[in-house]
Length: 301
Ligand code: PMP
Image (cartoon, rainbow, N blue to C red; front, side):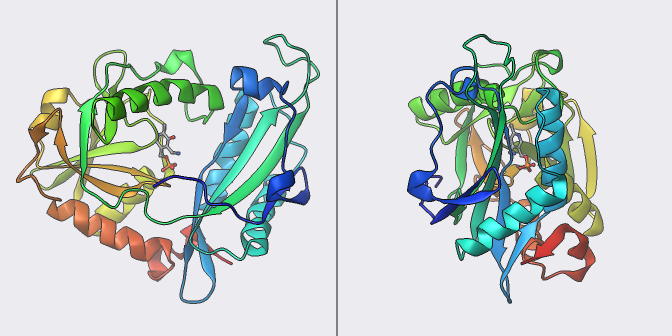
């Protein structure tokens, strides 16, 4: 699961710092108000060295997120991409999770981060499977923040208070994960992953502006289409979910995680679905650079 396994170095504002020395001040703005932006990027052991999956798209989103908070990152996208590669290499990691984070640092105590510096770091930790079991989930009582309560497509630290509430509630009630609805009652996403249903051999994803337009989601839609699976985006009701043949979550950390029940209702035959497993298998090859068709998505390190 997601416990932190230490690595040796963290890249902080352009320098590699020993893990135990990578500290910030307790009065940093981000610690108090969630004024941070971040990415989660997955690196995989490949036949030779490692691959990083869709690094460019993650860094694009990182800068989009930073821009929405008015942060000025004093590094270029290329430099941050190189920092990801350098940190992975310096820590001698291959199956790993890379975490770029930009945050408003030490400043005044007001909400407006006047004159606050934007600090940037890239950490990298060993990573295995996030979920190696079939998931049993519940519908959350916490609504995903509406589109006009945040910035679409931005991964802002503070947004994750909403995710933590949903996740905490799900775990407290004995479930693995939560499915969140949007403010109109349509299906949105999980606390840190996108959601799909399969119905009559079609892959359907929720059309919800409250959900993060995830990079894994985008990749899976393309892969499904290439495999001849029909795809559709539409507003999904909870009843559509209950009546689906298969369900799964997806995300950079989660990859493809099959769901076998929701709100204690069994989905399909209560086992991982055929299309879910087909996509999961193909995805595993694609991220490790084994399928040349998707080589544009993979950075070899
Ligand atoms: N939704 C949320 C809220 C997330 O935090 C994530 C993880 N980044 C996702 C969806 C999945 O996005 P991606 O596939 O880009 O990791």
